[in-house]
Image (cartoon, rainbow, N blue to C red):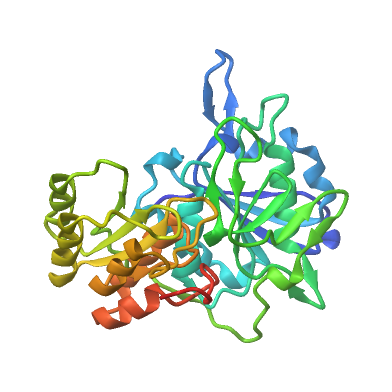
Length: 359
């Protein structure tokens, strides 16, 4: 892929204290209005004109842009491989990484990066904007500036946030614990089941107990295999056996993230349970997650979820749908044995779920 590379002269070389690689994939942050008033991709070679305060940060900044910026609604597995590969190839050359990404699927991409970059010990900060960087009231400048500061923050010589995260509207969230909840407000993301990693006010107040600790000597491993023979099935009152069976009979289907009610509850009609049982019997892995933003699956708490446990449906605990489906895609491609896939789906790999409450 022919990436566009721009190196920004943000300060005198003698003043440079750290380095960041910005990966621009697309999204609102990197858009600007042209003379006709239409939104077009922004030329990052001119970013110092839009954000002159960058020159005060004493950071060596390199921008790698995708050849064609993508709307995040079009993000696919190859884009994930490209993002992870860029970080892997440039890992030793930079103190941290900032990924500029559209908001709609940012939580999916951040979740997937946390799995694909095994052994990560440097910051990978996703950010974006609800308004273009050229807009008068844009949130892009503050999101970008703070993301860069977080990506280079160190304590005792080590990165403060050595994990994949999302910074948006003053809040730093663990990437694989986040989800987009707003389309018209600046506070677009939340992490209901895990505390914020930091809050940016006059200072950036880091929540150190919530941040994954830095591990000395960790070697980064890049996983480039993913399997998208998966689906998300959201339950609703009135769902029919025809819908269930047609989903489970999709050719090649290997895994299903089942969005259930409340704490993991579902209909208890015999036809519903029989449909799930047939799917499990033919090797389809089903992971139960809650439809609630702050939900946690506790299979067996009520009779309606006790039947799921008996059938062999797995409990996703407090994992988000975004983290669940990307984890399933990752494990299906990188584990050969079904029992290992099933075991790892209900086990925290990179802080994407809590250990307590899993069935």
